[in-house]
Length: 217
Image 1 (cartoon, rainbow, N blue to C red):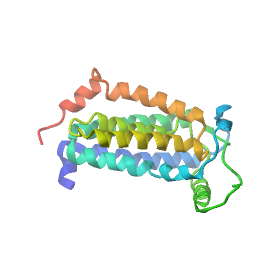
Image 2 (image 1 turned 90 degrees about the vertical axis):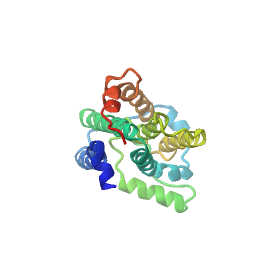
Image 3 (image 1 turned 45 degrees about the horizontal axis):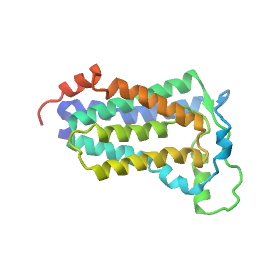
Image 4 (image 1 turned 30 degrees about the vertical axis):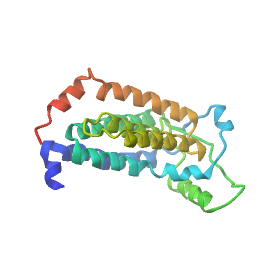
């Protein structure tokens, strides 16, 4: 794997995730109050459902699985994927700093306590209710979809379908376990579309540059 990372400077792209995590938890530590509450009436119509905690936690495994597949099978696709992740994730952190935001939708008492509600409560304790808009879960889900669909090596229609369905359920899970407002989801979709134009659009100068920088395997 070390040799693989050295080729085409893939190690530099791989640093995106650990650097992002450091920056994210730094922002989480400092941006905790004096935030704008994200809310729209539709939030009240969405019921809490603890079963959505299961797809919610699949977000990071899906991101890593997409990254590993592209790393070993599609060098150009990996560069595009990690560039998309870097631009979208760090742009989101910048938004959190410039426009501190949070949500006040979390369930404070559960009607039917069970293992899943216990797990949701644990999620609440591990993650603050701030820095929510746009939703990184939504943006990350789009990242996996874009990475798979733009890979010239992956041709399995079944796998692409699974990725789309998984990404959609993960995005929906954010509002059903009350981790996000619908506003955060819409903002995540908008940012994802904007970064897609920058990275993946066929006429994108960045895409042409990254694909042209790949040496023969």
